[in-house]
Length: 474
Image (cartoon, rainbow, N blue to C red; front, top):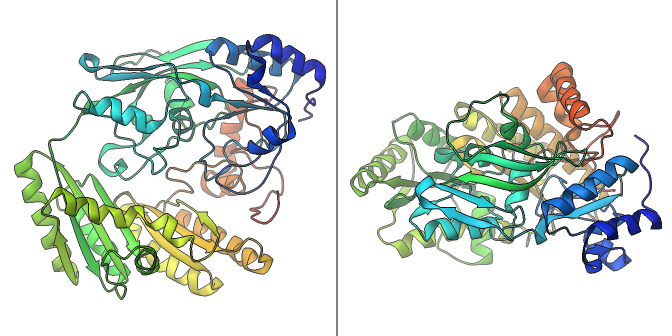
């Protein structure tokens, strides 16, 4: 697609739409701040626009569609897959200023939010009235709900409660033609026509720009309990995960850390974890206090029967917090090993968790990379992370091959490229591997129908001919 460059005349048209000239950024230092996200590559926009209303968003998108200029919706740029990167230049639409609406309606069990509202703020507002918004990505303290909606974010609670799409009842969206539409509504049941809400959630800004969302809330469980199980063999830990999940217990969270994670955390901030263990599992159950007490005891017994060296059940809220602190320390801890972190989220069926652990061990040895495994083990959403140094080109080439093999292993085991991070531009080269040519073509047809000029977030999801994973350039 041949896109028009943003010239001075276009900038003047943009300034007529945006009421405050300070929210139209063209200086080099400002553009630099929007040239990257939490993944890889640097791509400079030609102009950054910070709308504060749906009407302003619609005006900018309509202009871009008329002039065939690419538009890149963006939140707080926490994407790990290159979701908001302006790979074709054009206009970055910074939606983080759209924070006016955060309404909680307890009687309807809903929240109505603007796209720039931080996810953590929604959690806090819901909890004030005894409710909860379950999707809890690790970046929730800094990520916007608009970005979560675009990527269909998950988190540790996804095992029991599902991901973002499971809590979206309705949307206000600006189409690629600059029209404003509403999908869904404020009711749990809504089967009127095509489910455009579900289509838009997870479409990574390629079909429309979300300007408001109606989110479902649920009552907050009255009690929680947590245990830590220590294993001398990571494959055995995978078997314990499978056994717990088939026992009738549905944990709220089930997280795993491999030995490399344990060692990194203990070196970073000693918490008393056993550095000789191959893996530890954290299990949390929630619900009625009596049910919670029985389920955590049963989960502990299962782990011991399968072969856990030791099982510790937290007896106080402080002990629970300390156990989860180790899991939260993993990301900062492993980046002390080497400065570059490649965070993947390949996901496999629960029954294939032990097999995926085995494949990851083989990949680590084959390519001699610093591969650590942690993540949401209960739903198969593992996070194989590789820590490297992007200045070492030879190492990064090995890393690229290892990442490709991780994706291939997940697909071969019946899994998926992404459980929660999205496709962006990083995983686009592997889409056909999972969907097949016909499946990918059907998605392209939807994109062509919605956005004939391909102005919304081009370069994402759909691979260019010959495109390969590239962690060293861009």
